[in-house]
Length: 389
Image (cartoon, rainbow, N blue to C red; front, side, top):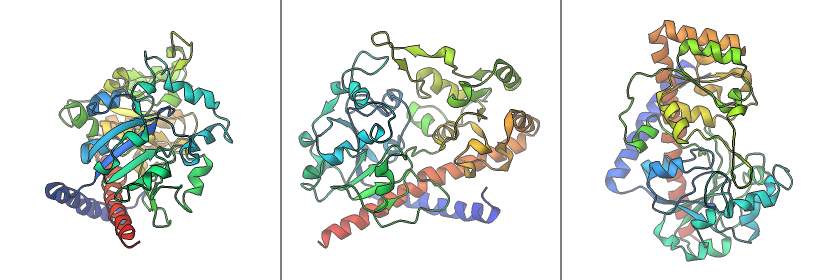
């Protein structure tokens, strides 16, 4: 948990970071950004270049991703054809050595996305067909632009995520960036920054702030009174009927269970449940609470989405990789502990509001204001180093 002194320090740092972003925006000092992924990537947006942010968000294959780039910076999203260069094939580590899914499964997304009538090749273009000089920073999801091309654009800062933190390239990138890249984005949003080399930048995959989804959807923030419980995907699939029935005491329950799975009509493959689908998105926007009490330990992506949408997040401590976002009043052990916490929130509106404000304040700083400023600083520092070569 974050102590009172650290909370005070974060508030001061957040004010300074927000003021700087606003000033840079007024002065035209923010970088122009391209976010790019390969046509075999099974996450993020599946849409044509120039698609508006809300439609792009709802086109995602799984997660909301760094959608805050599109409300903060002048940002384009591009799908690129997967290049044969070694640096553009780190995605294969999800099969060798991790053995998650065969390479052919990832490649199938080029021709057909489960549940849709198209594949990602519909929107993909070759990396050498893009005028990269239009951008100050290009951010790849698993390196998408080969070094033979990045070398042709020294005025661009090339940054990348390794999307899955279990991939060998994730750990290796802390020592040195992958060939042709300048900056490594770690996914990190811990209160204390990662201690790493100058190419390492803590930048979350879920680059979000409170009210982000309302802004993208053109809705008022914080909106009307909220009711109900959004059950995290991992908990919903293991929840019993009795557990879900007890949650109904706190309003309508949104929980996608195994029985709710849908299959692709052409291939029979399961269509992943997405929080950004129209039904899931509306549930996030109306529910008062987002809860998780079982299932595997998670990094915090769903929690961040929920807080950004206006929910109060309560996650069981032992299964939570980001307890620092919650506060003591929202942490618990076991399903009975969750019910106790929810009842306490319902009985004490002031406690609920304090807890909500606490989560949103931390989210704004750790998942938005600090990483935005750190990326800007790293952009300037990298360009300065390049100019001295």
